[in-house]
Amino acid sequence: VIDWQRRADRAEALAALLPAAAQALRFLAALTRAQGEIYQHIAPRVPPGPAPAEFLLPHAAPLVERVAAASPPALAAAGRALSQAEWASLLAAEQADKVTGRDRAGALSPASFWARALLHPFWAAAAVQLQGEAHDGEGRCWGCDAAPLCGVLREDREAGAAIRWLCCGRCGSQWRYRRVSCPACGEEDPERLPRYSAEEIPWVRLEACDACHLYLKVIDLDRAQDAEPVADELGALALDLFAAEQGYRKISPNLIGV
Ligand SMILES: [Zn+2]
Ligand SMILES: [Zn+2]
Image (cartoon, rainbow, N blue to C red; front, side, top):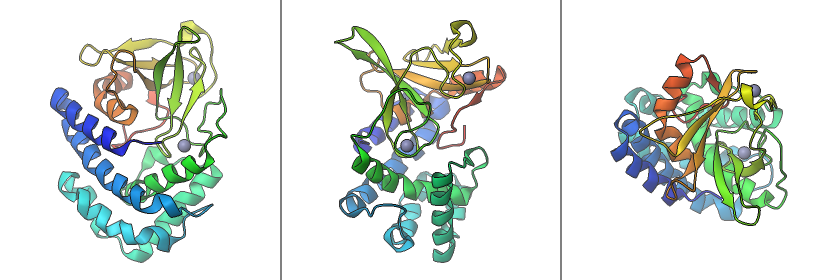
């Protein structure tokens, strides 16, 4: 379940702390507030299966207008230029990709960015309906089969250990995953799973894999209780720059394609 208000507030709070990511975080805050409103509207009557175009189309142009001021100008212009027919075909294409597991995230066009932004509250509502079917141990989202955007560490008092959860950027689901294992390729040799951190954001850690050269960021919720996975992942831009220098690629790109 996504707490839209908390994500937006956290993004704004981090924007004041992390100048390098401030613009992206303010954009996330605006987008999240708009998505939260759409969620409130659609969640009580989400149909099973893919959303028919007419279910989401009334929210499409208003979404672009709500966030245009905080958006990169070219992205806002691309969103405003979309006709209803284009919106409908983008929404259908994104939902078909979700079903087939095709991942075009690496080359996200501005048009598909908007389609995903509109689908995010829908996918979140659909995942909430599936709750209870969660399972442990897989490297992909149990709700929608996306690769994880990031992870969080959360203390399990009964087990007396921190448990790693993976977080889906597409539908907002979280699921437990082994601490020492690459979610992309399953590598389990600790020597090949280096971890890095950055001074300005010590509660976020870069977890890389020297077998597949992919990485994701993991947020330690015991060190930052206000943290919200999507906002903190985006804010920890310094770690992405470092990862790129080291030749690692992210398992699943975030909102700004990093
Ligand atoms: Zn998901
Ligand atoms: Zn790997």
